[in-house]
Image (tube, rainbow, N blue to C red; front, side):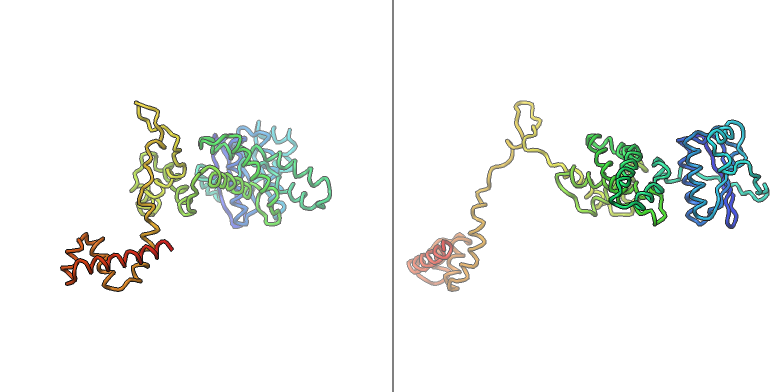
Length: 372
């Protein structure tokens, strides 16, 4: 991109000095600079185009749109000092007079601070959305719902914005999901953005549509592409982790990522482990053994015979509570202490025959309680 931007500020006015080429690739950055000035309440803006060597039709359209927005807010946006090819382009497009290109710029050189703008730090969240969509949507909502022009205009807006929505979908092209499916999801998000946009709030349509479309894409990945749905806390931390990897590089260690995000290392490990669990392995997947075609199902263990005893183990303590204390002790010494009847008789001071009768009575009682 061949464009540099410098700002000079007054109390209620802004001078934007351009140097380079103003085209489809660079004009979104100029538009973002102007939007930020609008956000501060400054709508009196002069663009000094003396250093602009070339300007294309897309840029002229954006400049006209910005001029309309400034005028609606009670201000003015002018493009002055254009020369050569740039001025000729403005004249051919019929925009030179509308942008007040022939007016003199009363801004002495001594008052120009010329603060350079780092275009690389600008967030171009809606730079590729067509201009004028907000005004078209205002027309849509001004029409009666039964008016056939309303539905036709709405369809035209969706068609006009569809390339920008598809461009957002292409950001996720390397995710493993079919690009056609992603574009369909983006188109659905675009329709939601068109139907949910409120022109009265004063926002640009792109500022609303971009998070709406990307949110629909993220919801698709969250709900449709994972066999196991992660808690929201892990989902959000995983997105932050992906951004941290882009900033720190693929070789960043877990301590580096944890320090960058301000979280514990255990949380990073949890997110990494959870990511692998989102796509469980099929039991029909091969084990990788060379000698045969064994699958995961072939090496899964058999049923544990102890499973059948779970009910009895849960029911036995309640049944044991119904026995007299001496019989409970005899059962415990026999089956938990592994003592013989003679050893139990010697420990309790009873005969072996008496121990046998008490044990038989206790086992009969337990059998009846457990079978019932």
